[in-house]
Amino acid sequence: MKVMKFGGTSVGSPSRMKEVTNLVVSYNEPVFVVLSAMSGTTNSLVEISDYLYKKNPEGANEVINKLENKYMAHINELYETKEWQDRIRSFLKEEFNFIRTFTKELFTSFEEKVIVAQGEIISTNMVANYMKEKGFNVKLISALDFMRTDKNGEPDLAYIKKNLSIILEKECDGQVYITQGFICRNAYDEIDNLQRGGSDYTASLIGAAICADEIQIWTDIDGMHNNDPRIVEGTEPVHQLHFEEAAELAYFGAKILHPTCIQPAKYAGIPVRLLNTMAPEAEGTTISNMTEYGKIKAVAAKDNITAIKVKSSRMLLATGFLRKVFEIFESYQTPIDMVCTSEVGVSMSIDNSSHLTEIVDELKKYGTVTVDTNMCIICVVGDLDWSNVGFETIAAEAMKNIPVRMISYGGSNYNISFLIREEDKKRALQSLSKTLFGK
Image 1 (cartoon, rainbow, N blue to C red):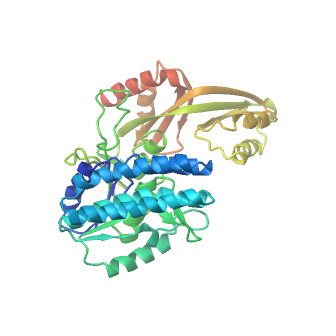
Image 2: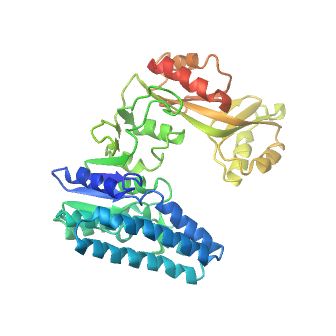
Image 3: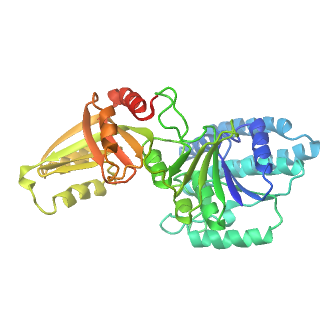
């Protein structure tokens, strides 16, 4: 069985929902479909919640009415018969009346999560009922019946596999199984969400739980490109990536995929394909545990980076120096991206500067601190094992005319990173593309 995940733009209109249906039913085997909320819906639901936090039910009701009218306008375009039009109209009325009930009560983060979950519940019901009207054997499964996190907020893999297996045994005759992405229950049985990776995470968890043949992530982009198409002309999709390569690209700027969401697929050895609903015939990108040896695959960039250098001759060869430095970042829950060390100091980069003042203040206890802002990390990804003689030289050659603040190489077999000024980003990406890919 294949798992197919469709994002918000893929189900963003009645015509898109019809296209999704055609893709799903084109397989001559049962498929498991994960759907996001229609594009823009989650933002509206968050806006409703924001009004309710501020005790402004009038503002919330205005957004609710606007969103309800938007959905009601889609009914006649999506469904052909009056029977199904009336059925969905009644369903939507119930949904939005349910959301309105929260405008009369004390509002907390629990109620917000319930409201935000309705986006996926609405989209899955609309698509499932459209397929039923067309005569397909569709099973709509609530993610709240099997998707669960533990007390640490991490997916409860054993629970997910057990309960999903029970559901599929009962509904074993389905042609298409549809469920909601993003939403789940927590360890206390409250409605919650998976946060990182959202619906992609759901698809990966389901794929691992049912031992799927393949997990397909359908978006409006034909896979991961070998450079940023907004900056560099002539970029191309990368046809094959190792899971580690995909994670590096996702972390360092390729927004098509969250770096943690494909971990369940990686551990289960299930390939993930990134495909384009606008061009379903395109090959896209396949991510697996296979490595293409001797190839540099892609370049990505991460903006809004701050570099911090701590220099102290007092700490020369002193044990515990790095531990003390890193504990400061840990105490302010600020992850470090890159690290470079010398005998008299250490340089680090961060992408969250919300506690920069406090961090710098504490670092000054251990040495002279300098800060560089408006920096950018350029990440070159591929088979960069140290035994591939000259590969790092090729990347460095492309950067020969760019001032480089830090270089990170050797921490991974798949990545070499350069820290540069944001103003040099365009030149760096274009130079790398020309040198590495001839574009």
